[in-house]
Length: 189
Image (cartoon, rainbow, N blue to C red; front, side, top):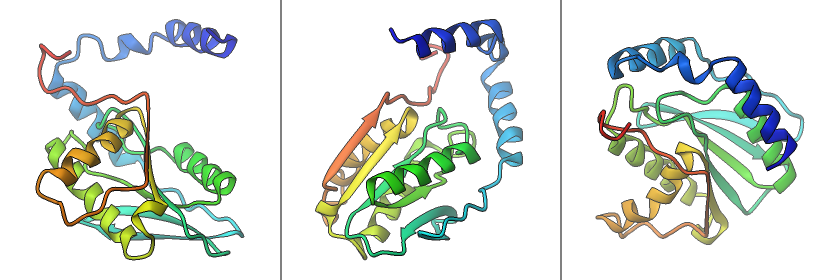
């Protein structure tokens, strides 16, 4: 294991981060996340190399990071958060750095969370965001990157398309980094 991992692991242990949620009922945990998510705002990111804007898909915001120099490839960037936490401003800054380093246009959906919606709603919204992307990019030129629970959503695009959305072509690439999902019962915890 890396030194960075060891330092982070010890820091998490010292701060008792795991214990913060231990002992909470599922409803207490969800209410805690709802309060925190209500405070979270989409950052006003600016960069001279990008046209940064927001669109709405199914009533949810999608942040678009579009290169001023035209790009023919794009990425659907699915940020994790246990499907109960909205993307934090720091995650958006990392997304911008990713767009700069890869030359990809980025679409970052603030998908419906499991705090208030069934998981199927997140898949539906992400699918619709992907369809918006297909208006501007060929399917083989679209990649999907998901981290943590976003990785689970990235992997879920394939079965979602196969389950009644066969008119939607598959994306060119899917990368899921440490995919996880939200749990539905005490037994799953």
